[in-house]
Each structure stands twice: as structure tokens, then as C-alpha cells.
Image 1 (tube, one colour):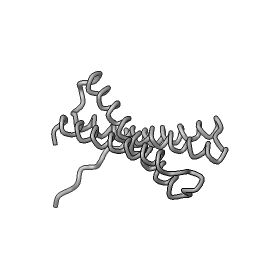
Image 2 (tube, one colour):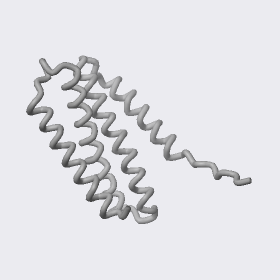
Image 3 (cartoon, helix red, strand yellow):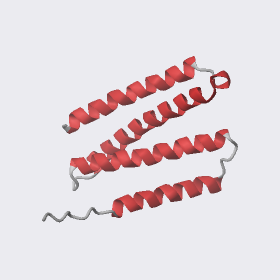
Image 4 (tube, one colour):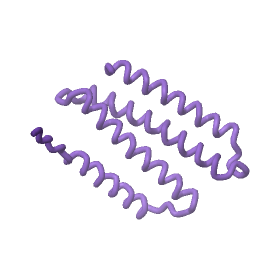
Length: 130
């Protein structure tokens, strides 16, 4: 898959996720919808944010870096898009149950930063062919 087709496909799916998010907000009542409506809301919001952050990260990496392969830029931007999306969704969930505090946000950011450091430092070992 070429970079152009990846960006176009990611853009189209992100737009579809935003349309799904707007449909959930418009058609579901959070008070009477229960856990199903909240699950659809958080899932569509997560996927929308994931697509947005991945595309923004990829475009910034393409503009400002030239040393890496494009495939590695795609992987890193997608992974960091996941982290940012998880951060926002967990903050919203904590806010909905009145547990959002600076300490909780700090611990969450620290945990996600440690996960990102692990993935940045992880090198796959070459396999031995016998």
C-alpha cells in the first residue's frame, strides 16, 4: 500500500468515525440509552481521535523528519495516536465518575510515557535459521 492510499483510506475512515460519533450523539439519549449508548459513544470517539492523531502525527513527521522510512513513520504515528486517544478517553471516563484529578492524569501520562519508551527502545531479535 502506498503512502497516498494509506492517507486517503485513513482520512475516509476517520470521517466515517466522526459521522458515527455525531450519529450516536444525535440519536442516543445517554440517560435512557444505558451502557450500550455510552459504549458506542466512547468507541466512536476513540476511533475518531485515533484517526485524527495518527494523520496529524504522520503529516508532522513527513514534514519535519527525513531520516526514517515512511513505514516507520506510519507505525510510530499510529502508536502515538493510540496513546493520545487512550489518554483522552480515560480522562473522560474518570470525569464521568468524578475521579479526574491532577494526580490521576499525571499517573496516566507517566504510564503512557513509559509504554512509549518501552516501544521506542524495543528491538526485535533476529531469528536464527537452522
